[in-house]
Length: 289
Image (cartoon, helix red, strand yellow):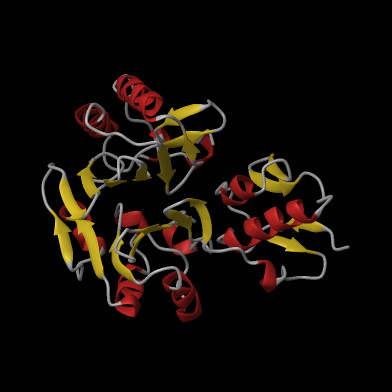
């Protein structure tokens, strides 16, 4: 049986650890295979990590993982699939497919581009909209939108990252972008950062906040807040009382499902804690995954 390992291209983005907990962990600022799989289920988890990894650093002794075990897009819940195949051009961010009662789907942020992958992502349902959470995740947006014949969305604050967007979200107010799907501008991580909340169930939070395994709570990435941590605190304070969701589905960091009431409480507490933070130098190594 092949042995698994992580090669030296790893950039410590945490993606592989999300898909293979207990098999891949962090050591000296990068991922490593902590033990080999013992059954088919664990082998499949390592394949998910391998096909999600943006640098293709999760490998076997024989080279490439088995394409037949590529699980993506992978269902997370009834109406959400995670795309996998994370792109180096989006700093390795996760992206998602949200299926709708109309028999269509929306893509939130973008995976690595290829026509073959695009066909795979369109298989569950025709994709009508590509929703960008902010500038860092805009790569491949136009290609996917054009391939699907879909509308590309971004906030005006980050419009220079997708100047050919078909739909532009303006100002600070919430905007319906589809039935049951609302965009909530939250400047902070970038000027044009947006949360997309669907069906009072799913919050696609981009890089505005995430679930941290280290703290067991919602967190912001203080050390990688490009625009303003003070603006992010103000944004969270403004929306914390309005949002209702069970799932937090971020671009970076872990995903988590909790009862909506508990998520609301944690989000309000996050807004309070973020208000105590002050600007600090950019430091990717300071992120507590």
